[in-house]
Length: 357
Image 1: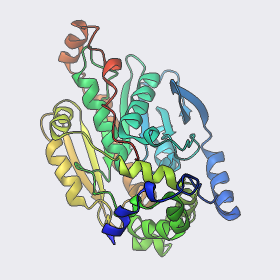
Image 2: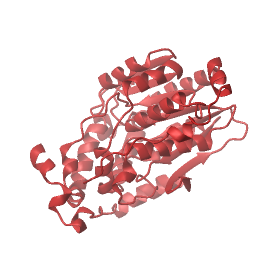
Image 3: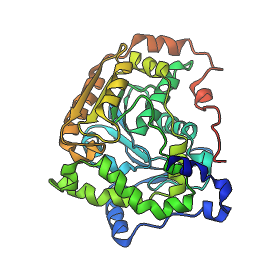
Image 4: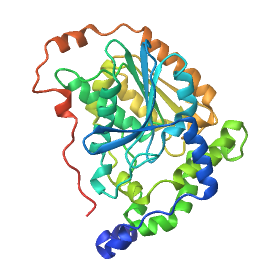
């Protein structure tokens, strides 16, 4: 019952129970994760004071494009395995686990997982791996799309503009975040006990029926990886993340659409973010720069893992189109008329959000 779940706030329970840590993954799940991690090694990098992230990078000296991958809510950079392989053939590649996810630190601090902090992390990664004269394309999924749009809007609005994002590929994206499930108002120790069932429920919505039936090698692999990634999540982090989930304003989204080419890809049968929600975002982004939307049949929310061939065909064409597109002249003028006290670095923080209590 939603009313019961919301009434069970932290004030009703001892602190020791509220901070209860999730159970670790099983030995079989750890074996799956170890193999996946070996294929995509990371380095722990302090991207800004007090914020260390697990970053996978494949620098390519002389490359003329960098592709930065941003996973969705409580996910992992592992979801981009096939897209990283595609991009790394000719481009520099960067992917990272957001704070609290994958191999990044998972401190039990409520504010650490606010939209503002996660957005600042992405801005710091973007600045760190931007190379003058090289185009930058951000490929994001689900809630990671909101972070990418927020960073792009802030960069365009600052004077001088921040590190440029020359293209955005958004998968399973939405304009407005979904309502926070009332279950995330339960104490953390209760969520930890429920974690296997919660993960199974997520997988039932995020994975297409063909995936659950294991119809292809990619889908069978995903059937093993998805539960392992979910089991590695700390439920305190999940609770803090979803309770503070946010998105940029419609005006900010439209400002991005006016300047940045966008490709939106939806899973045709996405039960978490229906294609109609992605279409609403597409309408807001269709305000100047080239923007197009495609759906991939027989896929749900994890479309890039369920049908990597179809997704990679769309992504590869988009990366090439961004590279071939002439740079907007007004961006250069804006940089020439820089005003230091309105820099991008000074605008990468949101106002503080409500704490857990």
